[in-house]
Length: 111
Image 1 (tube, helix red, strand yellow):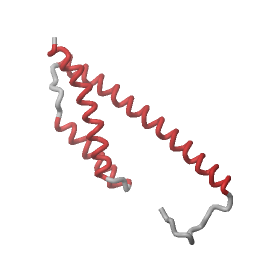
Image 2 (cartoon, helix red, strand yellow):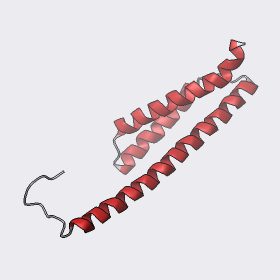
Image 3 (spheres, one colour):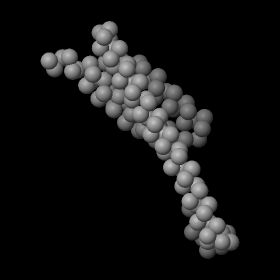
Image 4 (cartoon, rainbow, N blue to C red):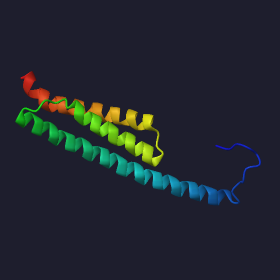
């Protein structure tokens, strides 16, 4: 952010406020799609967990985690996104996925 007093200032505060509000509306719409996409991903992971449980497939699939992390790293490299950010994000997503699958697959073991 440039805090230099010689930077170009908006000609109208109300116009600048309107532009900022429009940009924030765009961001809110993106956030809504992102949250819906995360929800859809977690629902898919639940279906995978049920499939694994029905067919005796082990919950942990380390090779699959590697595939997902490599894809995120490739995306980061080709789109100018921080690789460490995407790794941390996917670490969180994968942890939640494992928690959900453990609830599904582990629930039979708890009985």
